[in-house]
Figure 1 (cartoon, rainbow, N blue to C red):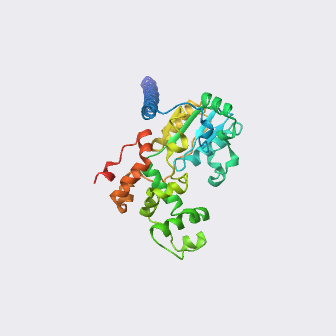
Figure 2 (cartoon, rainbow, N blue to C red; figure 1 turned 90 degrees about the horizontal axis):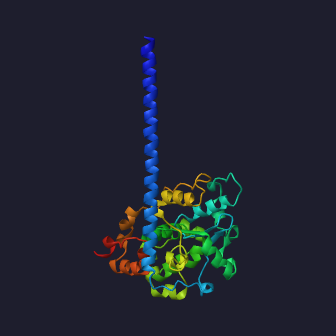
Figure 3 (tube, one colour; figure 1 turned 120 degrees about the horizontal axis):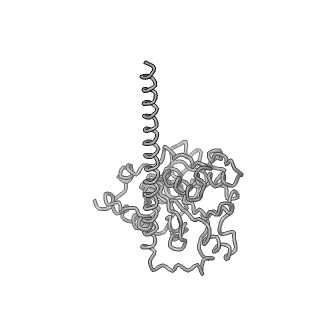
Length: 316
């Protein structure tokens, strides 16, 4: 009886060891496969930029004339991040602020969203002399994250037209309602306007963007400005191009590239993020002609960053 028990114990132990071996090898295979897919994905994204930037002058001779407002520099870790509003930029700023501390790094989510957007928290590439800018761009790891242009636009509408502060109310909401809805006698304060449910329709917002007078008056506000105009992918050779649609996987891969994978964790995605699947519903109120005009406004973002032309919206 004792021999049988010993045999069973050995059998169970061997079974456990085999299971551990298989599980470990399966996990290693999964990691290798994921890394391979990510590497292939990055190559495709960067090759696409090279293809669509062909013929563009890559010289940085006129770099002083280029808008570098969105380029954050982390000298400690040798990083340059070009942030795009409405593309996880709050969480990337949180992560960069956490990396400014000594190890162990604080949880990025310990930094409040409004606080991280204050410009004094960061160093920007535009603050350095031209020679230093060029040196940092040559030697630092440069990355950006992008998003389906129409989904990003919907997100901007939800954040700034439906939930505005005094700045957005005065500068955009009132103007859009007065110009495209011919509304007058609007409240002066944004809080009163919010209480009364004052806001432009999504179609009003699109009308404002496709109106040729809008850009003649002033450049687009950054939350709906074209991504290529903020991050200059035909001038800056990015080491990593992340997509919002694969945010968590791309963030993990980037931290691994930076040798920070085990040191800090990128915050989880917002559950209220605009879904790609809901785009058609949002555009139901927008006439076909305006949809096609809108695509022309953002066409370069679609092409450069590998997003398909939304034929279901444009070819009805």
